[in-house]
Amino acid sequence: MKKHPRQKLPSAAVTALLFTALLFAVPPLFAQTRTEEWVETGRFGTEEPEDPGAQAAPAKGLDTDWLYLGLRTGPSLRFYTPSDDTPFTGGDTMSVALDIALQANLRLLSFLSVQTEAVFTWDKASMWAYTGPITSYNRYTKDYTALSFQIPLIVKFDFYPRDFRLSPFIGAYYLLSLGKLKASDSLSGGKESLSYKVSPSVGFLGGLSGAMQFGPGMLIADLRYAADLGEFEARGAEVFGRRMISFTVGYELGFFTKQKGGRP
Image (tube, rainbow, N blue to C red; front, side, top):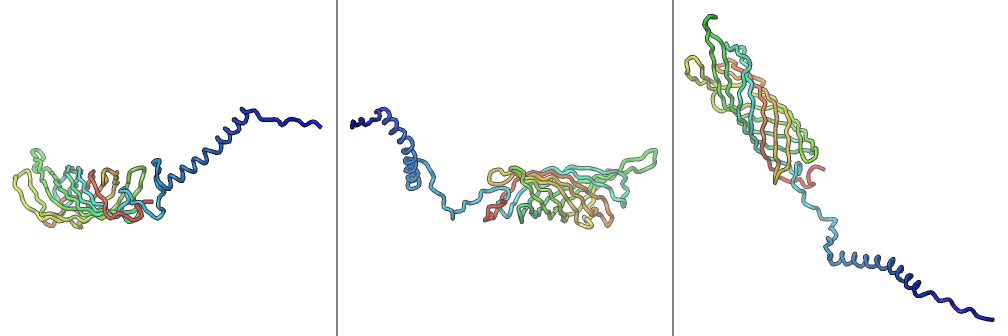
């Protein structure tokens, strides 16, 4: 019986098969070798695996600390209304003052904080009336000046759109006088010192504040409306009531970092 000769694969086919095998087998092996080397030696610029037990320190931000201390300043519009106890018939008068405020903000929750302040204020109210007969009356004015501290207690509700903190707030304040209420009039040109008293020495306020991280702390802004519940009194008689609209800007720094890194 005649045997058939064994067929041999062409050398080109053998070469193609070997190349295909190397193409599919070598890269996974090479990748595994480099991965092991990365883990063991940290070469090729790859970071070493993180320790699951290690906790990174929280970065400073809008709600990473328990206490924020700040300073603000800006203009304040003052509106004064003569009391019924005075002879003045002039309507509301307005003046512009510069407010300077020191503030301390305690962050109780991510959405709630309590703030107290010491706001230095300067008031200058001008009242007027007409005196004399109708045919030749004169306009009579009297100017009052006073320095005081407002000490508010404020509750703020905090929201965090993008990289900002917006906080609508409400509160009340106590008015602490600095010296006496002083008065001068346009008729005699004289000046007299009058006792300074506000009864009751409290008021209410409300507004909106904002903060944006800048450097190690935050840029802050505050827009508010405030009104005294009582009226300024001189010699036992009510003189005028007061309302205020103020806009102040400033800077605050955080202290006592929260362990959990602040707002989730």
